Amino acid sequence: MLIGVLALVSTLFIIRGSTSNVPSIYDFTKRQTSGNATCDTDQSKPPGDLTACGNSTLFFIWRPKARFIAPEGWMNDPQGLYQRDDGSFHAGYQCHPQHYQWGNISQCSAFSDDLTYWRDANGWQDPKTLYPSQIYDIRGVFDGSIIKKGWQGYPTTIYTSVFPAPLGATSNPAEQQGAETQSIAYTKDGGASWIKLNFGLGNNPVIWEWPVQNMSGFRDPYAFESPVLAKMLKGVTNATGDYFLTISGGVRLEADSSAGPRLYLYRQTRPNEVRQWTYLGPLVSPSANVAFSEWSGNWGTNFETAGVTRLNEKGEAYDDGSDARALDIVAMGTEQGRGGSHENHWPLWAAATYHNDGSGVSTTLDAVGVVDWGRVYASIFFPVSGKRSVLVGWTYVCALPSVVACGS
Image (cartoon, rainbow, N blue to C red):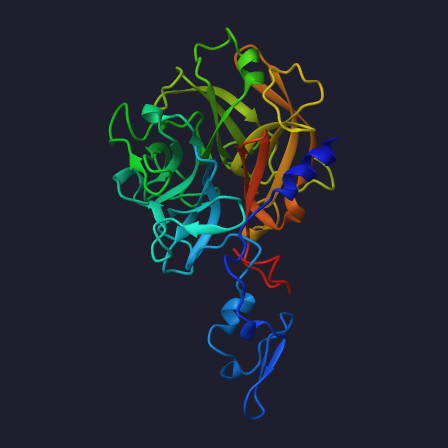
């Protein structure tokens, strides 16, 4: 059943289709021009004499057509994914418009009625919808997730706000508290623009204190509802909100040889209050640089871009644990888990069993695997109508001879 459930998720792995048919002039494998020059568009070889290629030939041939792609510039992790009240979808993604390298990370956005055809928010010239503007996020707006009825009832994102300071699991000097914090923004127009809460005590950033010392990362908050966890923690904690929250990170090995990647669990302190969160403890805490099995990737040293869902054969399950055939699923990116380069991080999923340990929740991982053959990263769940759970990931630019399999 596990394989079937994950196959369901993988088949919904989106993202973008071409919004119009490619003109017939570009629908060819070779085109002869005057003279002897040939524009060769065989995707397994260099294109040959570029002067023989018509205007935009390479754009149409090499630009990915089966997935969502930014109109221009750098893009990476999906974020801020949700289904709007009218049934359409908002997809945010990390971006650096007008640059082809990572930096000054913002959230760009696009909208779709069917998860196939997409239109850029506010036009292709500048699709940014949430961007660095305050002292606490001036280095970047990193991954965030959605609370559908959040601040004053509006769709709300809780995102990682980044301050200029050493950052990352391998930074030297080490990252310090305050480099990565969690902040709130909300939208009144379906995601075309986002309004940040004011800066200061009781507002942004809403989570700034590390739960433990010597952390290797503290980012990518993922908000979710879980009747299973709510039932398990009844009377165990004073936090009573409807939403739980994971923050990805870890503890640096040079500070603690038994440390490793961690997924930190929080809960809304009170219902309908998105500014207050209570720390419950680590949800997932494996040893560093080991694998669950020879087929399941490596935990690395730091978690990123984690998400949580519960599935049965019909899709997303909202039971409180009464459905014996439902599985709790955690997905995470493992930093430094696959050889050191960013592309060599592992995108993993795990089937989890939660336990009440008296003061919080601990987790046994029952099965672990690799998402989409390891060709993606930052895979994240979001719920859609019909009790479906859609998993979306970032596909790297690569050198494989297939334009469908490659491209951010």
